[in-house]
Image 1 (tube, helix red, strand yellow):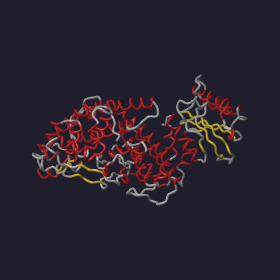
Image 2 (cartoon, rainbow, N blue to C red):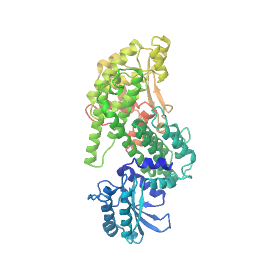
Image 3 (cartoon, rainbow, N blue to C red):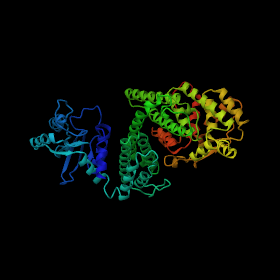
Image 4 (cartoon, rainbow, N blue to C red):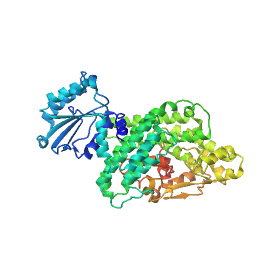
Length: 573
C-alpha cells in the first residue's frame, strides 16, 4: 500500500494537487493549518503553515512547509531563480520567521519542512545537510519526500483503524483493473460504501454518525478515488478516471443529503475538494478526446456508422456535454474568472459541435437511453449560445427517427439492452422482436418537444403524423421526477421516484404542443430545478452529471424552460 501511495504522489503537480493533500494530512496528524495555499499570492517561501504538538516529543510547534515537485537535484537547489529551493528556504528564515509570525505563535518551536513529490538526489544531499547545520539555531528542518509522505498518509489518513484491511484489498483490486475499459469498479464501490457509511441501497448504515468521523471518511474516500483515477490515467484511460471522480463526487453528495440539514455545510469543503478533482479529470479527458472530435468519423477509427459505434459515440457525447455544463453552470467571483469560464465553455462547445458535425451517427441514436446524452448536449449547446447548431442537429435526428420508425429498422431500442440491439442487427426481419423493441419510446416524445423549442414546425408535424399513423403502436412517453427525487438521484438514479407521462400525445398543431409545455412548467410539483439541493448551493451541474452517470432521463422541467430562451443564454429559472 505504501508503494501504491508513493507512486500516486509522484504523479501529482505541486499546485492544486500536492498542496491540497498536505493540509488534510496535517489535520489527520493533529496539526491545525493556518491558511490554505493560494496561487499567485506571495508567500515568502512558506506554502503552508500549521500549529500543533510534535508527534515525536509532544512539544508545541509551528511547522512551515516549503512545497516542491519531483526529484530535487543540484539544479533545483539554487539555479538563480527565486523559486528554487535555497532561495525559498532563505525567505522563510529571513522574512517569514522575522516578520510574519503572529505574536501568539512566536514562542512555539519552528520546524521548516521541505516537502516534495519525489526524492532528494544524492548530488544535493550535502547542500541540504550543510544548510540545516548552518541554520540549526533558527529552526528545525525536515525533508518529506514521496516515500516519507506516503508513510505518513498510510499511518494517519489510511491507518488500520480508519482504513480497514478489506478496504485495502478492494483498493488493490481496483488498481489492478483500473485501465480495463469494461471494468465497473465494483471493488472501489464497496470501499466507498464502507467509508461513507452507506448500505447497498444507499441508506445510512448508522442513524447517528459522528460528523467529524464522516468528514475524515470523505477525505479518505476522495484519496482512494484519486489513486484509482491516477492509475487509470497512467494507463491511458482518461474516461475511466473521469468515471471514478464522478462516482466519488455523487456518492459523497448523496451521503451529505442524509445528515441533518444544519450540518451539511460542514461537509461542503470536502465536497469542494472532490469537485475540483472532477474538474481536473474532466479537463484531462477533454484534452485526450479533443483531437478526435475534429476528424471525420475520428471517434470510430475512421470507420462507418454501426450499432456498436453508436453506443461508444453517445457515451462521449454525454461526457463532453456534462463537462461543458460543469464549466458553464457556474458564476465566477471576478471578471477574470468569468472570462476563463466563458473561454472554457466556448472551447467545449466548439468540440461538441465538431463531434456532431463530423460523426453522422450522432443523429442516429440506437438505444432509447441515448436521448439522455442528446438532451444534455442540447442543453449545453443552448447555454453556450449555439442555437443554430442545436437546431440543425435536432432536425436531422427528427428526420431519421421518423424514417426509422416508419421502416421499423435502426430505431432506438426501447429495452436499452445491448443484447437486444445485437439481436435486432442479426434478425432485422423478426416481426415479433421488432414490435417488442419499439413498443415504447422516450426518444420520440423528447425529440418532438425539442422540435417545438427550436421552432422546427415541419419536423414536428412529421412526428405528429407518424404517432397517429404509421407508427401509432409506439407509445411515446416522458418521465418526470416527483418531490422525493433527491433521496436516490445521486446514488443510483431515481426512476422509481417519479411518474411516467404515457402515452405522450403529440397534438397535430405545434402551437398546442407549445402551450402544453408552457402549462407543464407552471406545475410546482414537477419543478425539478427549484427542489434541487445542488442548485440551491450553486453546484447544479452535479444533477446533470448524475443523469448521465446513472442513466436517468433529464427532467423535462429543466429543458422545457428553453422554449422561451430564443437567443438568450440562461438555463436558470
